[in-house]
Every structure is written in C-alpha cells, then in structure tokens.
Length: 426
Image 1: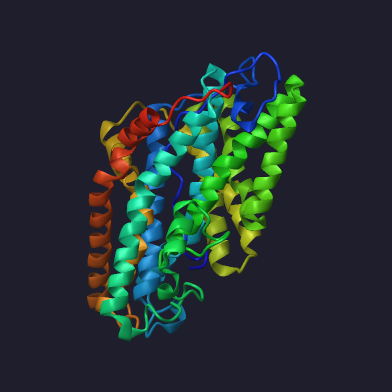
Image 2: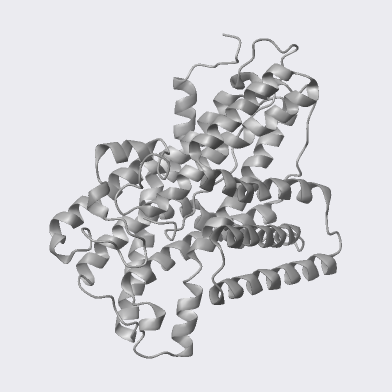
C-alpha cells in the first residue's frame, strides 16, 4: 500500500543509557553509549498534565488515521458525491488528515525517545542492550500479533470475497498494490524485521506498516549520531568514527525516503531542548502562544487541503508547525491536575498503537462483505453503518490491546531475563 496509508507508530518513551569507558579501546557501537563521562544534557521532566496532553494527542491521532482509512474505503471521493452539504464537507474535511497524523506521531516519537535517551545518558544508565530491548519489546508486542491477524483477515477475505476483486485489484485511493500478491512468508518476515518499503512490500493490505519501518530505523539512527558526536567531543575518535560509519551505512541501506524524513523525527529532539530551556511562566503568555500556534497549525492544515504540496515539503512544514504547537501545549500545565482528563487521555493512548497496526485488514474485510461492488454514497443510512463499522474496529483493537499493548512491560521484563547482560567488555 502507498504512503496514503498513514500511521501511528510512535509510542511511549522507554529506558536508554549512558555509561562511560575510561579509554577508547577497540570499541564498537555497542559501547559507544558509554563514552560520556558527564551528563550531556538533563531534559526537563514532564508534569502529569503535560504527559496527559501528549497521551490525548496520540490517542486522537490514531482515531484520525482509522476514520480516514474507513471513510476512504467505504465512501466515494468528494468529487463523486451525488449531493453536497456543509455537513458532508465537514465530514470529509475532518477525516482527511490521515497523512498528517503520521507526522504528528513522528514528532511525538522523536520527543519521547530523545528525552529518554538523554535522561539515561545523564544518569549513566545507558546500554545498547536495554535500549534495544525497550524498543523491540514495544514494537513487537503489537506487531507480531498484528501481522498474524492481518494475514488471517486478508486470507479469509481473499477466500470468501475473491470474486469482488477487492483483494485481486488495486484499491482506489490506496495506490497500485494488489493485496493477494503480498501475503507470502518472505513478506511476513520482511515486515517482522522492519524491512517493508526497503526490501519488501507491506504485508497484504496492511499498508500502514510502512511507518513502523521508519520508526525502527529512526531508533537506530538517532543513538548512532548522538554517540558519534559525544565521542568526538571526548576525543574518542575511533568510537566516533565507528558510530559515524554505522550511521552512514544504515542511512544508505534504508534509502533516501526514510533517511530524509528522519529530519521530521529530529524535530521532536529539538523540542526536548526547547521545552527544557524555555518556560512560559505567565498563564497569559502560555495561553496566547498556544492559541497562536494552534491557529498556525489549522491554517497549514487548511492550506494542505486546498493546495497540492510536494510530499516532503508538506511533511517538513507540518512537522515544524506541529512542533511549535506542541511546545505551546506542553506549557499548558497550570490550573492543577484533572484525574478524569488524565485517565481519559491514558485510555485513548493505551490502545493507539494496537489500533494503528490492527485496523486496516479488518476494515478491508468488512468493506468486502458490506460494500463488495461499489463504494457508498454518504447518506444517513450508510453513515450510520459506517459509524458502526468504525466502532467495531475500535472495540476490536481495544480488546486485542489488552493482551498485546497492555502486556508490554511483562514482555520487556521477560526479554531482559532471557537476554544476557552485555557491557561491551565481553
């Protein structure tokens, strides 16, 4: 599937590291994180309210992705509407920001992961082992079941609804990929190891998996670049060169689309520094900035709906404006805590990754069952059916998340018990 299949792949911040060797021995990238003798940077901690703001944005953005894909799958395009109204125009507008959601999640991921890396480095607790376990446990705990379930829905749909052509022809609005041509074992394992869009296509209909490959390789590129710079500052030239060479090799391997869009992820890293250094102390100043940045974000979204920008330029603009907006959101932590708001935000964010990974194959299966020939006109009856389909997908994703996303910590602890400690000296 094309990148019109947008995604939420970013998730919560996890543990990283930062110990130091006394000398630059025959070091490898596995020891590069230990080169900082002092704290490089101590990021500002998030307040409970600021953390809830991030959770709410993450949760809502996942819903935007799902409703965007469901609307595109079930309803005709806007220029094919039999009749138009203000309500329908609004419906198509608010469900049209799926691609922008991926930018939101890349910036959020950059902010959360960078902050965690800096914190671990500052405390002297960074190790590549722990970093790898934290990242892979977070990704795989949902991805592995998601690949299996996606393969199940695609194969079942191909068997039951093969005559509709939905699984044997390109899907309108989602590129030229034919679902049944990408259900092989090789494609499954290629996606399992984050090689989609590099060496393999996305598995079956699950086009949103493209962003998981991006995320995984961003997680690899960032610490390599960071510790190459730290080692250079310390004069540990061998370690610095090895990290730099590894960074270049990875960037060349993943290709220019992933390597260039890494700059969007790094906007979250910039936000870590901005949030830690500058505080809008006065409530009036914070409110005014938040309103101004929100207006700028809305203006950009409106502009993108009415103009066709180059994808990379549009993504860079979206990343920059959203980063500025997020800085304002993080300042809005005055007025005390609201436990209901925090719990609601946590509940939405708690299955956002599962929703992203799981939603599309089930949506396509339901499209093949309920609208096998032509897409619907969005009349009252069909809109009601569409809402029920969406609610069913949300409930399905939430239920699966109880056994996947909700078990991330247990899986992470199991991986730590199974994998021996490695400090680069053995």
